[in-house]
Amino acid sequence: MIIKKCGGVPLAIVAVAGLLASKLTVEQDFKLDSNLKSKPRLKLAKNIWTDVCNSLSSELEVNLNPEGVTHILNLCYNDLQADQKTCLLYLTIFPKGCFIGRKRLIRRWIAEGFITEKHGKTMQEVADDYFNELYSRNVIRPVDLSSNGKVKTCQVHDMILEYLLSKSSEENFVTAVGGHWLTPTPSNKVRRLSLHGSDPSHAKEAIGSMNLSHVRSLSVFDNLNQLSFFKFGILQVLDLQGCKGLNMDRLKKICKMFQLKFLSLRKTDIRALPSRITKLRYLETLDIRETEVRQLATSIGRLQRMTHLLAGDKSKRLALKFNDGIAKMIALQTLSGIEICGSSRTALADMHNLTKLKKLSIYNLRDMGSGSNQSYEVLLSAILYLSGCSLNSLAIDDGFVGFFEHLDS
Image 1: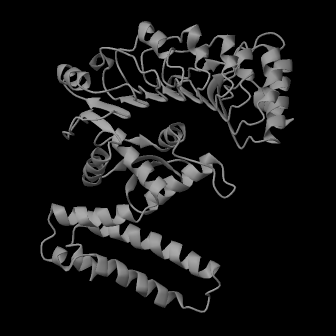
Image 2: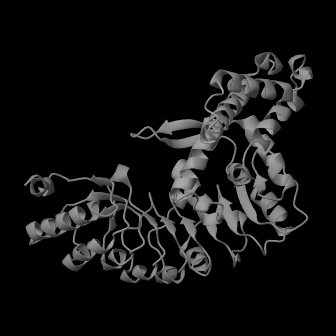
């Protein structure tokens, strides 16, 4: 009966299946926790299936038009918790067909303040639960899986994204400019602005008519030339991954956005970061992967809230030099894409202080210079110490220089 009401449309069937699976899990757990173990699960499941079937209009099976699909999507959307709805609407930040990195999305959720600690779980763990919930409900589909079986990148079905854009526009949640769908210019304050790529003159005209004084999140997916100015005083999330037109002058203006928590410059043409980057005292995530940035000033250690420092280019075997400043960023949980080459022994010794580090990725160990054996021993000592703290993921490109001989011994 449910399949009939879905009109044979795959998206509708998959969406309702995700809804059913989620309701069965939640209801069964609730019944068991309430000591109602005597109620057969089969009867419980039948009741849930009947409720969902009854909530689907009988008119749908006759002619499942776009309005009918919207009815089904609305049913699935309304079944989510309030904070899960917020995380789902956030997907409208990304353009049609965009591959969305799971970690990128989760870190942005946290920076936006959507995630809070619950039931003894960290914000990262709660965010992972929310992502998995959306995945299990078939709202997002996997594109790539990591080696541990987790979703690495995902995508949103076009029809679901169009539905979410409509909901987002109603609630003035995300303002998207350009792309495949025309969204109305909000009459009130813009809080999250996403430039999906379009004719620059049209984008400038659209942006010029908006009230941008309260923008907290800015995402640009094409060219920064769409922005004739860079005045976003209370911005907390700035995602410029893959953008063209990012120069040193604009980088210096970014360094005046003192409220920033998330900054992605990944896949841009930058070669260095201004020293005034240290003014971003609230910065938690800095992504400079696949750029030409090879070194940071030692003053970077002033960023004591930094949780994720992502650097290097694995395909080109290029990395960010580990220095005394990075060793002082004691809040780090992820340190990816570094090289130890030429790092001072003081910096290596101070690596012991990164006790919150969960993931460490070293791309280069070559050219350790004189006293390399002692440097290897200091590094090994730090890694062994951190493994007894929080470190649970370690990747090292040995480069055949003998480090693992010390590890084996």
